[in-house]
Image 1 (cartoon, helix red, strand yellow):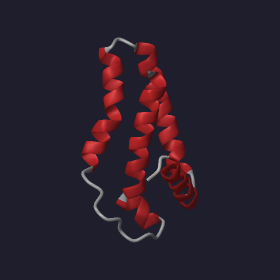
Image 2 (cartoon, rainbow, N blue to C red; image 1 turned 135 degrees about the vertical axis):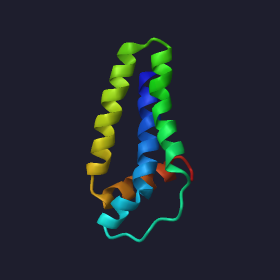
Image 3 (cartoon, rainbow, N blue to C red; image 1 turned 90 degrees about the horizontal axis):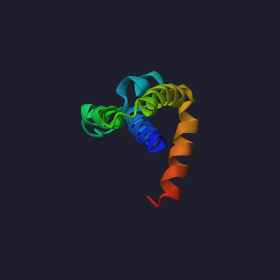
Length: 96
């Protein structure tokens, strides 16, 4: 359950980083098309932590909190061209 919570949050953070206007400006990319409301995606990223708290799985919550923070930081620290290549491989693998 913890691993699924971490993966869910990481996917949400990946979506947020892809359309972040400040990140795109800093890398010299044109503005991205509107991808939806970022507040909704932030809310979806936090849902696993809330569910772990309500389930009383405190150790899982702490692991989720640490892993999602660390992996989210690592995701945005990777150069953008590598993220694009990884994103395309993931989309091909899931058939999109």
